[in-house]
Image 1 (tube, rainbow, N blue to C red):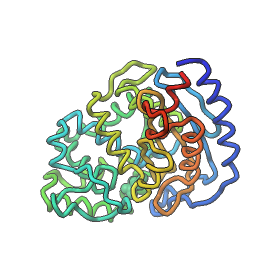
Image 2: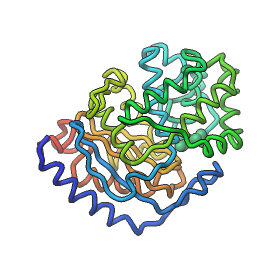
Image 3: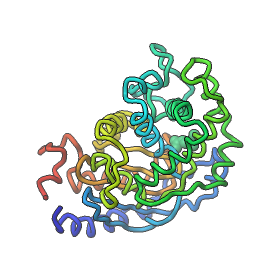
Length: 322
Ligand code: GLN
C-alpha cells in the first residue's frame, strides 16, 4: 500500500471529522439505562489498512460498548465452529427489513431471519453455548481480542444493566428455545449474549477488527489468523444485506460496503482486501444507527470511491490509487 493512501487519509479524516463535529442530531440509547449515561457528543474515527497502517482522528481511544457490532463476530465464530450448513439450521441469511429488536421468526423456517438482528444473534449465542458451554464467553473474548489485536474487557455496569432490563431479549430467547433453535438454558444463553454486547472497544479497535475481516480473517499487525476466508465471505455478505437493520437498503445505496452498527454508537465498515473503518458517535437515529457514524461513512465512501458498485468496480475505486 503506498504512502499516498495514508497521506490522503491523514488529510481526509480530519476534514470529515470537522465537517460533522457540530452535528448533534439523534439521541443516545436509553432503553439500556447505563447507555443513557454515555457522554453524547464524543466522536472518533479510525481507518486501518489491510497492511496494518492506522489513521485516526477525534475520540478514537474512548471506550464504549460494542453492542450489536459483536453480532458479526459471534456469527463468524459459529460459522468457524460448525460450518455454514449447520449454522443455517440455527439462523438464516435473509434481510427482514424489521427493527433490530423485532420478535419474529422467518415463517418458512421457524428460524430468525438473520444473525444481525437480536433474535438471530441470540440464536447464534445459543449455538455457541451448545458448542462450548461455560467456556463460551472466554473463547469469545479471546477471539474478539485476536480480531482487535489486543485483549478486551467487559463493562460490568452495562452488562448488569442489560441483564436487569433485557426482558424483550429474554422473550426472544424463550421463543427460540420453544421453536427448537437451541436446547440450552435461556438464562445462560442470554447471559452470553448480554456479555458479548457489553465488551468495551474503541474506534481504533473497530477499525482493527474491520481490517481483520478485510484481510481474509487475519489481523494485519499480529498476523494472527482469526477466521477462515469462507467464514469472512459469508459474514461480509450478511453484513452487506442486513448489518444496518431497517436502514440496510439505504446504506447499501449510499455507502455500498458491508457494515455493522451497534446502539453503543459504533459502526464498523469493511472494504474487502483493502481497509477497515471504525467510527464512534453515540447519538443514534430511529433505527438505532449512529447519526454521525453513518454520515462519516458516506463522506469517506464518496471521497475514496469505496462503494462496491462504483464505476471502476474492481472491488473499489481505491484500487486505482494504489
Ligand atoms: N444489547 C443490545 C440489545 O440487545 C444490542 C442492540 C444493538 O446494538 N442494536 O438490545
